[in-house]
Amino acid sequence: MRKLVLLTAVLVTIPATAMASDLVELLERGHEASYSAEQIITCSNPDGIADAVVRLSQSGGDLHIAAPVSSDIEITTGYGGWTLSQAGNVVSSTELDSSEDPADPRYTVDEGTPAAFLGRRATQFEMRDGDLLRARLIFDNETGALLKAATYTGDGEVYCERRFITFDPTPPTIAMADVESGNRLMRTDVETELPEELAGFNRLDVYSDEDGFAFGYYSDGFFSFAIFETPSVVALAGANQFQVDHGVYGVSYSPGQVTYVWEIRSGGLAMIGDLPPDMHEAVLTGLPAPERRGWLGRVWKSLFG
Image 1: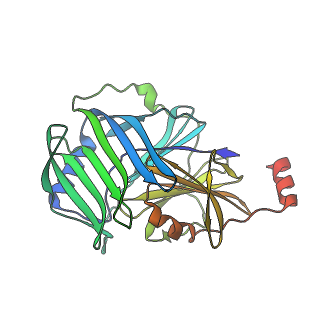
Image 2 (image 1 turned 180 degrees about the vertical axis):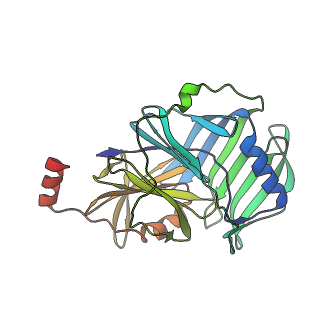
Image 3 (image 1 turned 135 degrees about the vertical axis):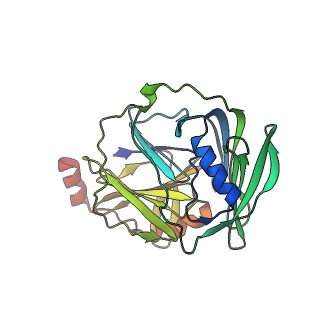
């Protein structure tokens, strides 16, 4: 069985958004800023509250996340980027952005209002999908760092809040061992049946390795998720069941992240993302439905992989 452990990063790019000019400037400045911070993540999930504290260090455009998570494979995904690591080493990492402004961006952002956070001068922006509030973002005026982000459900309730509890704009010292490459080869010339568009999300890229581990990365310009295709069923410890008309999924929530897993005839699928719960079903119904292999297929798989 393939084991996935997820944590959430805060990588902010908003390519499919009509943005105020001040926000564009803050995003550019924040990408290049150097700082250290502690961040608390609190999410109101359907199965309860999930929270965590992570340590962030950014220097020279590289963001590093420290959290009490360990596994053979870790996928870090967030607003506009992903990182895959194995045995503690970063294997591949990217921050995805659109090369062209979309003709019809999904979200709009206001002009911003003055704010204060952690005793620092800041600016708050509201992001909307039509009349629906989807996020409030507070950026530090000096560095451009995102100090606080709240995302909202379709009912207008807060889904997740990420906020710094400490912030030090002094350039941190980051050990080079933290960014040494591992031995997992990622390929981008991948043939896949994953749709190019899924419930309003665009597929930005597809990756795979020599073991048959493959995933497509999707974004609507702010929220994002990855769809993983694996030769065998994905293990998800402590998963609950999520049932819709076309099948039953395993689902697990962690701070800022949701993971769905299900079996299909050719192996396993998993969806991992940061999108609010009211978006989940539309994404799942656009993918192959859960389907268990017959007993002969299971025996063959256990013997020959």
